[in-house]
Image (cartoon, rainbow, N blue to C red):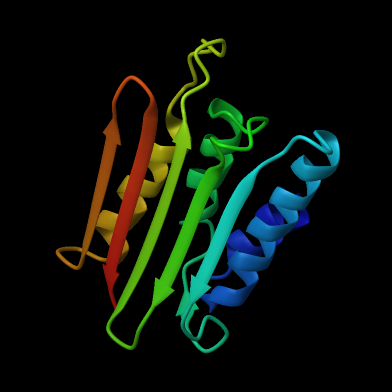
Length: 143
């Protein structure tokens, strides 16, 4: 909670702080659903040297955990972050929990989309795909 309240006042912060928030969020849910919480999180590249706007990546992870299947080992939430000198690629996929039918407001993702348009006009792509089993997002930002 402190991260979302304090860090959103800063325009840029080390990407490692956003990753730390995501890791803490995952750890919290891991404790809540222990021992049946399954996910992968791979990170490539120098995340501590890149300054990046806060709260652009975390909402995708929050949604994947909230709406996805996390208790089946063969259906984990998969998260991948790849940073090079020219691009940031962030991908999240989750199996859809058919028992979870809550309709969200969609405001979190709408806010991320709008912020991306303002901060990275013509310098990003956001693809969201859904089929009967899997929801997948792929974000690419030119740095």
